[in-house]
Length: 250
Ligand code: SAH
Image 1 (cartoon, rainbow, N blue to C red):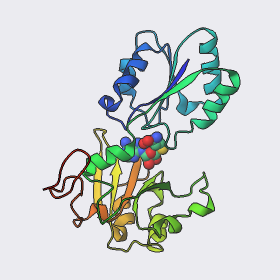
Image 2 (tube, rainbow, N blue to C red; image 1 turned 90 degrees about the vertical axis):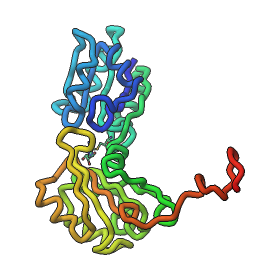
Image 3 (cartoon, rainbow, N blue to C red; image 1 turned 180 degrees about the horizontal axis):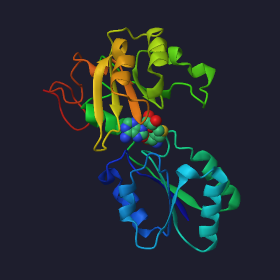
């Protein structure tokens, strides 16, 4: 059995209870060493076989899983944040299905949640934004044309950009082609929930300078939108005049 486990954003106590238990029970662990906090490996029992997938290609990862399966062992494939977001798990799942190896997935705290916590922000505010767009600037992995950043930026929703901190000038240019202005609030969160976490607040106009002055090129999220500003409407949910299925409004 293979368990894909979300490691959380970095702090070792941000893994789920289930994820921790799976790590404790695993015979083999393959972890994404470029981003997963190695402190999580302390949850493993003595003698666990540990592989860092930063130095492995897909076939090598699969062959470790296949061998472990043949030996009746349990494998944890530990991915950063939540595995469903830029986790490259689909290709592994399809290969496991083809080989008849059973697997399941344990979700994790994505860095986008950890970044919101660090910023003390709510991504969805009444009258400001009720939509969060998760995307990335095109890099060595292209982005489908229909999702070009200026097109997404035209919506003016809350935007969370992964894998883009090294391209802040291109990101800024794309944002300004959309609904955002130089004055739209913008933040960079570097290594959210790690001891070296950095929170940089500014505007779309200052985005490249914020990244450059702090030497940030990777392991950071760019958050854009008016939810980072001061204006919003109060929620209906907790409005004393609003009736819900649980409460009669006054
Ligand atoms: N599955 C992960 C994302 C993997 S893609 C998740 O749910 O968070 C890797 C990118 O995620 C990095 O380039 C960076 O943009 C972002 N990232 C991962 N961990 C981060 C952290 N602790 N703080 C800020 N950004 C992070």
